Image 1 (spheres, one colour):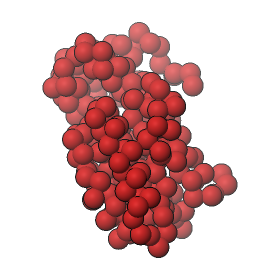
Image 2: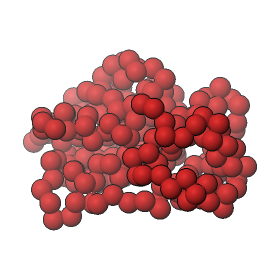
Image 3: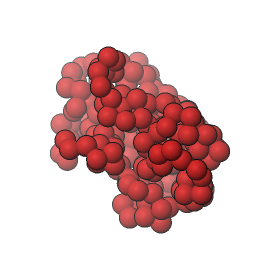
Length: 215
């Protein structure tokens, strides 16, 4: 998918967030005056680049945290209709895997799901047991999990095994996402997940597919 902003400009705003320049970052987005869809494309390109630099140890996790907080503030400046009062296509339990505190990608995904699904956000550092118990409580159609850390990715297989071993009125599907799955699109198959959403832009489509809704 082509970016509405040049790579040079994206590198510029990435330098802002890595330097902790909150006001400069917000001013850049204000002056760019992007449409919502274009804004998401730019933010996802930024996230992917930040994740890539962290995974090759070019920047420490502390800097990633500060940068993510600034980008999250930018994300919160635009909202999608939450679809209150409209028919929902299903119920989704959302969270990041235990020992994973990287919330920005999850929060962006949530914005795309809320117009179509009832979403229960469990937050970050969510245990397998909590995913299972909440999915059972809310009779979820999908458990959607974001994972950035590789040890969190490895836990996804255990989550899938726990889903298969648990008793359900309606067994949920497992959807996974995060930088490791963007880098290696086939990685999700090793976790046993039913599907992977490489970007927030396609997550609603993938979830519709999992619940059998044509779109």
